[in-house]
Length: 140
Image (tube, rainbow, N blue to C red; front, side, top):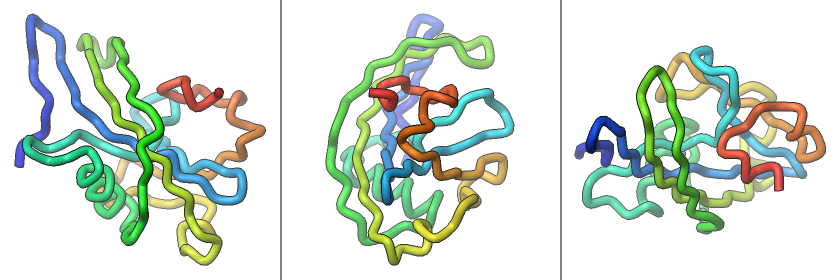
C-alpha cells in the first residue's frame, strides 16, 4: 500500500498518525540523528487504511508493540519547512498507556526497528520543556 503523501503546488501533503505513549509519568519520544527535535513515534497512513489501523501498524513496525488500545486525543494540522520542502501535514494523535510489565516500560533507550537512524527515549512529563518537541501541543 502507498503512503498518503502527495505534492500539490510544490507543497508536500502528509497524512500521519502519531502515538503519545505514556508510562509512570514518562513519555516515549523518538530521536533522529537527522533532526534537532524529538517527536512521537508514528508514520504515514496508507491509502485505504484507517488512522487507528495505521497507528497500530506503526507501533508494531517501529517498536514491536502489539495488543494496545490507542485512543484518539488530537488532530493536529501543521505547516513547516523541512529539508527545503514545504509541508502541510494532518496528524491524528493517539494516546497509549503502557502497563508497567510491558518490556518497553522497563527500557531506557529503545531502537526503532523500522528506522536505524532513530532511537526512542523516555522523558519525564516535568522535563518535557527542556527539549524541543514537535508538534508542540505535547507541552500542554
